[in-house]
Image 1: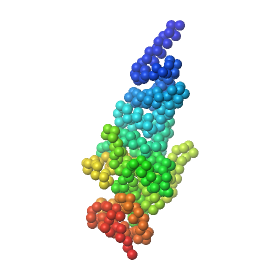
Image 2: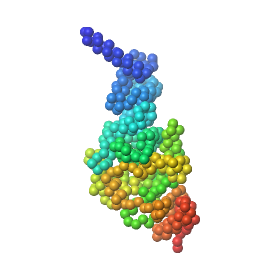
Image 3: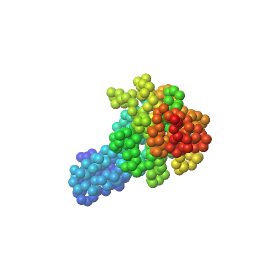
Image 4: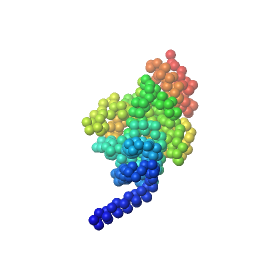
Length: 409
């Protein structure tokens, strides 16, 4: 009997301590039984989020706040617990609204928050240097719409790694570099699956129109125009979203973070995710020997999400800002499949470095002009456009060049 009493008081003390710590209140309308069951269910969720998912108290407090906002509006017990279950489900989806709010509220240091995200996804590097996601959490399908998560994740990456060593500094930086590929995958799939259009580019334009986002075509695309033989003229263009920062939360900035590579002829996306095979276990087959030349060309010219902010021609960045080069250009090792692909397919030397590469597309009108030029005239027109760009020292786009749009007879 004394042991039973002691156990009761110990449980009661633990209960009071828990609710004092997280400052949770329940409406009087709930009544004693519903109030008890609600608190017990919420306590179980909090314990899982703390012990299993390793969230700190600030993030947990944010979760409780959200649960209260969603459940206290309900009147029936079933609706209350269904709303609570939906909120918890979102904590298991990286990049969801609930997950993002917890991430923003967390007071963990930036590096610990980055590590936490990869831990939730079970991110591990396999024998071929490819990042496989094996964890219990999922990656939100609608990441492209969640500007806050992208801005917050970029901010923490820059806080930790925006210096001369960049992501090469440690193993976490290596995994963060590889992780960008999975973010690319979500963006690609979301546009293709949720917007109408005859081509990928048409769907992307529809996305931009419906969401009010602007597309940026001004950053250099030479790394995405790799060829096996001699370079003749660009076959692909690069599009980054959004063109300028749309976030107003603190110092977060999402400008030109998301990237798409588009074939100038077919208007289809060029991407490693067009060709990767899945194993029977649901992982990505990362063995470079399992891919042919056509597939490797997609891998070599694939899109790449930007942790730093590319300059382009937006003039919204200081010339002293080099985070894009530190984090995105001079990055750690790629997976073996991409290293193999880029040994076969080489990027052309840019005009700025004395080479023959210059972007054809800087505005949407440039694409239509280039597509209207007959195939046999494209090398000649490009040569004139290159010469014009060299003489003027500026790249305007094929439709805005004095000589670029002139066709040869």
